[in-house]
Image (cartoon, rainbow, N blue to C red; front, side, top):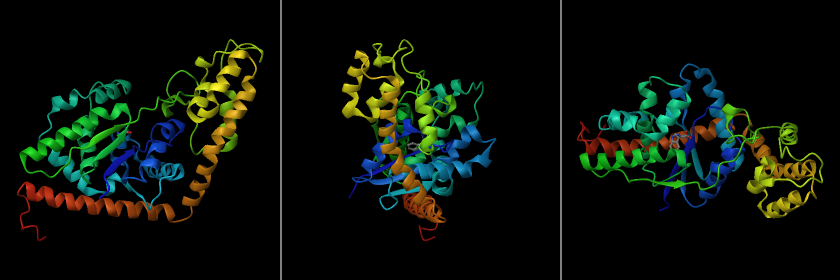
Length: 331
Ligand code: TRP
């Protein structure tokens, strides 16, 4: 039996090259070896976007297409929509009985996010979303959860929930393990912070070639370099960090040429563009393929159907463990 992994994204906008380097690329490899579930966490997106649900439908589609474009294969990975798996909501309620408010308040990721959003108070749903995320992972009894470092407190919560449930009632859940991505965060086009939608410094997987070219050609490089023969400082150059992330084979050489002033920024950017297009063009082709009328809906319906079946199998175990299978399970 293959081990099962579960991971996914909040649909709050299109995915970018930072997501590709940090998670999507890895998912594509993992699906060959593991039974893979990809969650599109639309309920979790509501924790911060409850006042604009009208954007969700489009964002869900785009995030699904981003995953498929990156190379997730619906024949190998089940891509599903969180809100359409009612067993996740059911588990969230049961789990919430034994998770204390202070445990949630101490969650470092909750604290950081609350700070970033400037929350002085928090909604019940926001404070409690790590419990819901535990249900996202445990409904299908996943073994492994590929995530970035920021998600570790949520995986700890998931392990706590699994352990506590098992000791309170009966051994239903495996204690899933995080598979942490060690890839350094991709810096944004501004060179100031990590690539992030809220900072407007992204190259999106869905950007047209002309848009990608414009973004790359306008990126700030080494401000001290005025003439192309001036020696450059690749260690502070955004473009150089992209060569590092996407063009490992030529990275050392590019750094040397930059330091020596033997390659200009324009030539360096053009080379990067070629390399990026080597990733992006096949993604555009797959995106177009999966955008054929009806196909994406069918993929999401099939993935969600499979998730529901797994969720129902888990709920039967849960009800039986808790003695809540009132009609002897013959429902
Ligand atoms: N919290 C994750 C993020 O913000 C998204 C997510 C929701 C998730 N449920 C999950 C990730 C379950 C891994 C497993 O990116």
